[in-house]
Length: 407
Ligand SMILES: [Zn+2]
Ligand SMILES: [Zn+2]
Image 1: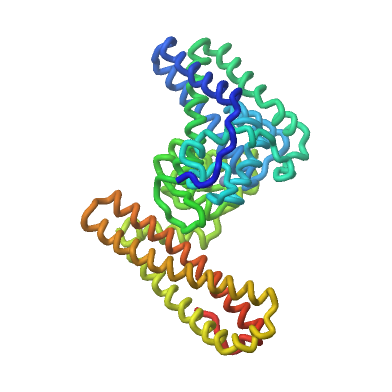
Image 2 (image 1 turned 120 degrees about the horizontal axis):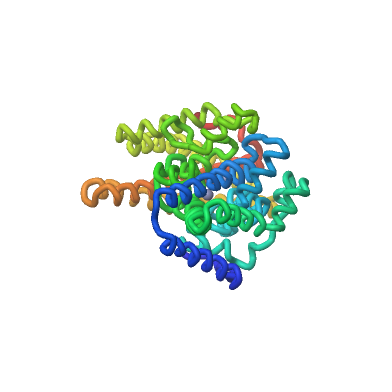
């Protein structure tokens, strides 16, 4: 599982992180009551909203607008969750989307293991700094930069306020336990949502969807949706995909606080609806397979046509070959070999999925089907690069006239 090395964990950060977990045990001393549980959950969801609707959908993705006052209030409320500064959070999240599950991704369970993606990375030396370059659009507000630098102010004021208002119940249930739950709820998006759940869209990362996690995280459990289309204020694309952050944002729009909520494009909603229908009628897999096979046949024909055109021109073209041609030729050979390998893997995965249906129950079947889907995405990418290389080769060797693209 672990393919790239991990940076060192900072002792002071890990110590503070552990200490808050220990402090959360103070609830045992305070004792259980309905008010205590309500305070804990209320404080959890209030701040979860600020993290998902504020830090994530507003600061990291700019999916709606607010004025400078509400923007600052949202940033402050988000920072009471003790997840470092608002600019730090949003800048690192933008990085995650740029490199999802690639070696550069600082919290990918695929690259550095589950626990690293969950909380190791946040305690690491290397990721302490806020990269103001990648969050320039908000770093131009001095009040946000100041808040970002003074990351302990908001959690301390918030904890103090809870203690003054609700005494020890406020401090231990409303602040410490609630904050620990909030940490793990938020971190689960980076870890759990790249490992467990259903893949609906063939994104080039491992993101997944989960109804349960959407309830825990006020809508962020539709993480595969989000990786497929990041620019919308919504992460649940269909009416039944619970997205409480979106519902509150719509209320905010009604109250004149949030403006210009960016919508999910109709084609994305349509695709989500189609995929959901497949799922509920139990035909997901077969339909996806038919579509894939049809697309494959058409692309294979295109590659074959281009290959023939290239073979006819190769002799003369290579004689005057430039470095560029040699590179393209190498890329073509690489992609062709890779495609052969992937097709073999795909056939094996398909029969594993079929065997899973008969023998090993739902879980094994789902895993095998996910593998098939991942291979499909990889085949599509590889096929694309093969056809790209062929097209450029044919073009370089003197025109590709008369070669039509597949429908
Ligand atoms: Zn995001
Ligand atoms: Zn992600």
